[in-house]
Length: 328
Image (cartoon, rainbow, N blue to C red; front, side, top):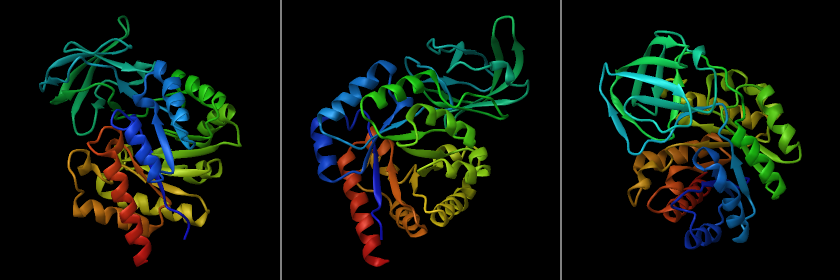
């Protein structure tokens, strides 16, 4: 049986000397820098900090073809039927306007289509396109909170470039600094991979993240140009009904096994441990079932980026993998 990898996402909870030393001690396989939560002016600082700690397997994970909300000073609640203007801008969002980034053609959106901001949260219905003022006028259809840097989902297909300007900057910087692992977010087709390969070249290890319906449709062609696949069950559940996520996961892992392609699984593996000391029985069972399907690795995201005990999460994952190997 080949080694089951643990990929650890870094963030405020884990960018600490004591924590990184322990994560190294417990032999985390890949240390992931998530560009969606890393300011452009901090990327080089993060890379140099990890290099100084002699951490070798650093992975740069792109923002990709994903629209997000800009910063808010504090999370804001929007009531149903409230009128809100939506802009493409890097400005702060507030009660009167919601700003989205990166730059894209906002007027691809159709009147009466929906915009969802974050998971199971705020939703807007487009009631008017004001092209003169470069704004969409919307009405809140589902009340909820607006928070900083949350993924935005449109009820129709929106054309976006596969890499953002920040992605391109970070990738070139990473190559200069000897980074050899990369993950591409929101891959939709093999053509998207060509763009990142132009920067990172064929010699470097590329993980293509399967998190859209298009990626599922184009799985075979994406696989041919990738070194590994990563199932992001969270973002994928925006496009696939949540009750069908286990089916999609099984099919992707089966595809990986048939094609000798590693498949890593992410999202909610140890979600409870963001705040609690122990996972739930359901989480423990999920990990075992995922490994039994044939997953090559497990990804800790918020658990190690913002959780109360990143080291505890890795230790539990190690124990869970040990139990799996002993009993299969």
